[in-house]
Image: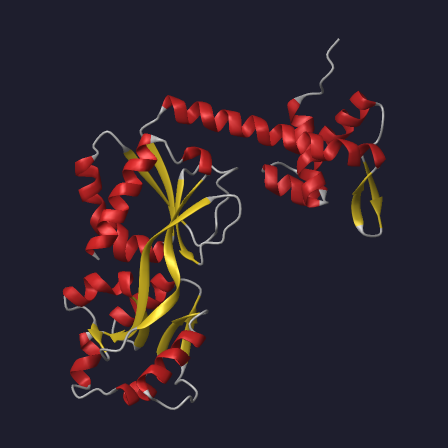
Length: 294
């Protein structure tokens, strides 16, 4: 006698339990609402009990459903992790790295040829996203993150401290060759949404009055703010690794010699059990070396 229901019925049940809705479960599974409903009906027929009931608050698990939900979730997660481990063992020299688009575009990509020349046996795949990926559930080996290093359930190693300083493009400088810090008030500030406190610290460091900033264009992606400033549209409080190459190439100009330390740093993040993997260790060693040259 088969003691397990079909896998698709359990996947549909898990998605519905997680999302509290057949419609949202269908979106998560990329199927129709009717397909989810049919799979749940099939599961209930197999079990001989109902697993969900509709209430004024939406879809709620029955007593039987509440017992089953965490067991199914844990089993599906375990199967997914098993598949990931087998895939990784089949291609041990492939690294998938999650990284912020801004850090990838303005620091990492230009340096990667040195890593690939040193380790031609390692294939690298980049997953650029502003989202903090779940390394326990997603097919990602490493993450390069900007923050305080306090992400739970992972090993995080700081490889670079950052400073912040205002910069602008030569096209803007050509129009104002005698630019002074107080002239910030003439131009649009291009800013990440977390930059307000850093601008305040920089003004204090310059001895400038703690007054309101000029018009501010706020972005959720630093890469977009950088593009605006490189196009001569204003000023940005530049993160040191993101502006180093552009300053050296003359594509950006410092507003002053005053830097302030960033409260956040750059971290290499992986699961503790993966730290000893040769490809991860090779990338970690190279990254720290490169950061030391920064």
